[in-house]
Length: 419
Image (cartoon, rainbow, N blue to C red; front, side, top):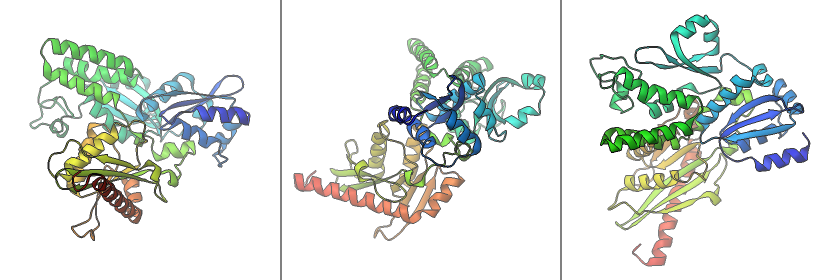
């Protein structure tokens, strides 16, 4: 593909999740990949970095690039799997590593379980055994972070990991992530209808039709005054429309693609709240990469909904308002000027929005001489990165504090002592 055509395509690519497809001069699909950002992912193929041998050969063959946007990284994972299974692009197969190719399976149990299984494990089973054990098998999902994926799917569809007839409710039932298989609150037929069928439709890549189906059911339940079930469906629809999680694309996927993220591109968002009496409440958001502040992306918030002085309540409003901006890229981590109460509040908000992004709180003490760290939502790799970058995170915390104070002073100067 000539340079002019390449540049024209790269300019048109959106900074959104999706799937990209590479075609050769014979219009044959030779490779398909998923991305949290189509623009960044495809662009990196043409930046002259050394790639594994199969990828280098593939780039020389590429004559055209097509793509399809999705609403989330999870849906990009699902769409990629559907295309691979249908077309078997040669460079996907050449780059295949059984250890990183995963499937999502639904068992034939009385109350079906949802499980993950690796390609090499499937290879050891007879086809008749697979058919007898599983009702559905979705994939392969190359390099999928299965732990993150299952966590999101459980929140969306509340499939059970427990067994009927247990003496005590299961852990997920207490978190309202299980519809009550353990305590006999749901029948086999209801479980199929409310949990398994919607999950299957979603994993088939048919989210839009699933949402329409659920919306129709919600209206029917409302007419019948079954308001509890209508609310459950309403919440499920909302969560399906708000899926955001780039953590699904794990390290092995990135290495296979030769797309290991450049450290400089890590986005850190730092937040602080500044109070001046009951009415003078403001919040700040600062943005850093690995090296320095990105001041063009700073944001100010004047608190609108919190009565009295509550740093936690003000922070909740700021994070809620921030997450409504789909036009702002999600960060590598949220950095909070505060301790356990603030971190736990932000965690609940992210869970409500089906997000699994690390949160780091830094408690400073009354004289701002204390730096006690609180870390949640971070896996081993991200926690290691966080612990290796404490000094950077303290800089972000201090800058968020400075920016919040500056904004508050600006408002006080404009309006006198009352803001």
